[in-house]
Length: 143
Ligand code: CMP
Image (tube, rainbow, N blue to C red; front, side, top):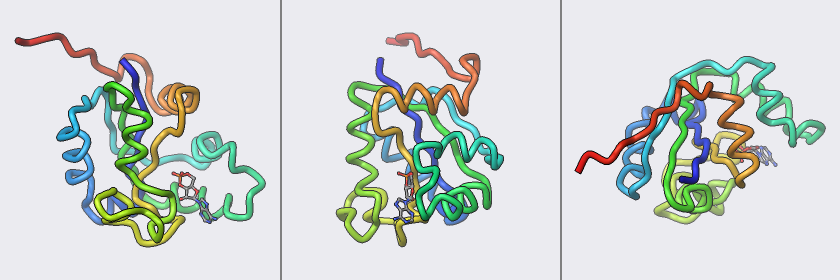
């Protein structure tokens, strides 16, 4: 089953949007297999955003993601990587459509509420960066 890494950023946590965001993914039919509220260290932030190193907004990016608690999650489901990106909406809340998380709740590009892996490789990399295997659960069929 495909898995992805999703994270409610400090702005989403402080605006109490965690419950609404979790509900959207639950209602879509995905399963939450790991979650934790945590502070990101500068070192972890730099590893997570390694692909943006050298870009003009890198320092702002690291400063923001380490500015307060984040809610890190692993979700699973069919095509969860691509589908969750559609549910999040475009990076810039100005371009994100209503009905998407960023379109409904986002204000500016560098404070855009939620992060989601953009492909299979980054999903694997980000899941292992934030979670140990034993922190993730397996579901067994109940019915
Ligand atoms: P995300 O896709 O989660 O990870 C990279 C983040 O960089 C992205 O969300 C935006 O929040 C931020 N970002 C991307 N482009 C810019 C930009 N031009 N200026 C400021 N922040 C940006």
